Image (cartoon, rainbow, N blue to C red):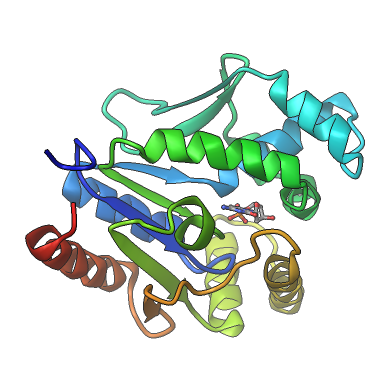
Length: 234
Ligand code: DC
């Protein structure tokens, strides 16, 4: 019997703003798999802790707070592939994109107890397979034995440019220089984090998406998945 009953585990890591969610969603949809953006878990906890006035640098307090919440991961709409974080019965969606959450989530992501707790949720979700999971430590720490591992990269300038266009297209003000500075700052905190920093797994397929569309990246991953499904280990 297959080690993972429902399908493969596809793990994806890479820096902020590289398109992991868009690509991960496309891949999951093509395969009929579930998709989860694990950054949303860190963001959800950051948002809730900020709301409640928990001191984000007090690791014990943040962990106790996290453990006291009721966590669920499920699609918001019927038949959706993306599993969203629900805290105490409520979906946490647009709130987690607030600037204060983006800025403060790295403090929560540096908390070893929180990383352990969220990694456990992520392993539970992936246990049966048939999942695409993206984050910063999925290929290296959460699922080092994933069936397919992808490291998605793009230059900081390209990532900033994409974000700039997204903001402009949605009618918001945008400052290209400030966006680039924020991206470089987030890269630094992801790469230099003491516990489970962002790094390329040795056996990951590295894809530089600087000159590719999201669809082209997804197709490249799907080719790898088909190969793995044919010759795979599970
Ligand atoms: O991908 P994102 O920017 O939405 O992630 C939010 C925060 O969570 C960011 O500080 C990186 C961190 N993160 C992490 O440490 N490990 C993960 N697996 C996913 C995200």
